[in-house]
Image 1: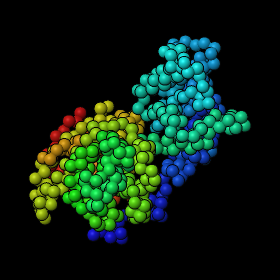
Image 2: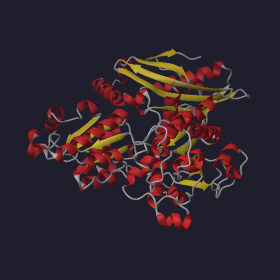
Image 3: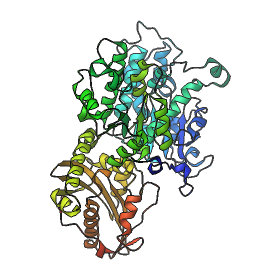
Image 4: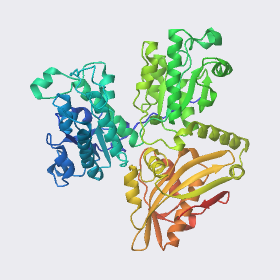
Amino acid sequence: MTTLANCSTRSISQDPAVSRPAAVRALLVADTVVDPIGRFLADPVNAPAIQAQIAPYNQVRQILLDTEHPAWRQSQDFSESPNLLIIWTTPAAAVPAFAGLLEFRGADVESILAEVDELADAILSSASRAPWVFVVSWTLPPYRRWVQARSMRHETGAANVLMRMNLRLAERLAPAKNIVLLDSQYWHASLQRPSHDPKLQAMAQVSYSRDLFVKAAAEIKAVYRGLRGQGRKLVICDLDNTLWGGILGDDGIDGLQLGGHDGIGQSFAGMQCELLSLRRRGVLLAVCSKNDHQAAIDAIERHPEMLLRLADFVSLRINREDKAANVEAILRELNLLPQSAVFLDDHPAERDRVRRAFPEMLVPDLPQDIAAYPSFVASLDCFEAGEQTTEDQARTELYRIESKRRAARAAAGDSVQAWLESLNIRVTILPLDRINLPRAAQLLNKTNQFNMSVRRMSDDELWRWSSQPGRTALLFSVADRFGDSGITGLITSELRGDGSAALVDFVMSCRVMGKQIEDAILARMCRRLTEAGATSISASCVQTDKNEPVRAFLAGKYASPPLLDLSRVGAPGHIAIESREN
């Protein structure tokens, strides 16, 4: 059994050798008073800390259209351009024609949508000023009851027209991949408390309550984390009284509460439904349970109301051992870090045990009321992500195939080379294009262990960077006799005028590590650079507390860091390479 001493317990905040990440710089442009959100965005407890500069009130179009506007240059503590531009407008102020409709002064839909187009053009003109642009969608004032009999009437009702406005804005902003339209209607609906404070409105002209600002800040941070690849990738679940009601060892399969016409059973079924939705989005599921292994397997496969079956889980640790040790074994098996995982367990002592062993893992307290389990899982904001790729949709199956590779490795005994040769690995080299661009950016943003530069870039940033003369970006798709792992590698380079070249990014998914695929990728890029005239190639590796695998790999390739010794770089003979380069 693995002891707690062997469990990963260090977090970034505990390591003095690792600097804290710099605060995210944001420019917030609004036509309403939103200053209170600043301190909630800056709160470091809910990372990332966002240092928001609030632009001058009600100058949205001026700021967006004027690249020389002081708002772009002035700041409280920083002089660099913002990492994030937040645009928060109200429908009546941003679209004056809509104010006429709202106040019964008359307005036609075409005039309203024309003003929406005008604002969209202004937003698009500023999209290149920041890596990410968040636009808050429009909602009706929460305290105003418009005529309900007419509110949804086609082209004349306030609610109907507002929907048209949001849809038109989404349509116009869609071509800019770094613009995110945030659903503010969800902020209001999910609060379950007033989102408007009449006293704040009267005293400070603030239209929103403190609770709404807290919620908005949390959602903005969650979306930003997801876009930067910091969403959670794995949910580790208990079984008894977590995925089903009852104790399997005491109640047996027939005695479990799950589905049927029972309220408690329906709640557990609802939780499984939410977890199944996460799995379909690309989040991995695993089981960590103190139970008889075979009895639990039988329950998962045989219970008629189980929504999650064995095929939905990538790892199972069902035994009587320490849960922290089992969690560590799951992470090691999947090659994931604690900060990638969420642990769900109904037992407070087990949660505390895992929480203490893995401070960076999210270990939330489940609700006291079992009926709230489904909505609790559905409301977790830690799985936020941007584009969904083919690899996301197939992630569970890709990890299950990887388990077959590990079984083949075990069967090969001490002969690693024989195992590698038995895999029939095929690597396909792909140039970066608009189709695979989202996957390339995802690799940059979500990969921590084998990531040389640790650069985080949006789709548009990566495309602009790679389009410059002398720069190359190649992706690598990997397959073997067990199946296709998809696009799992990215390497970029820059050829300089003095004949030297540099590797800029070297990223590889943890799923394909340990098979010398990294050697094949490095060899191919170095060959391309030398054929283009490079006389020396360097590879500078940024050190973090997570990317030891790439540092260890490159350590054996240097002549004198950061200069590579090309005599140590070569493609392994057991890997077949096909090139689709330009």
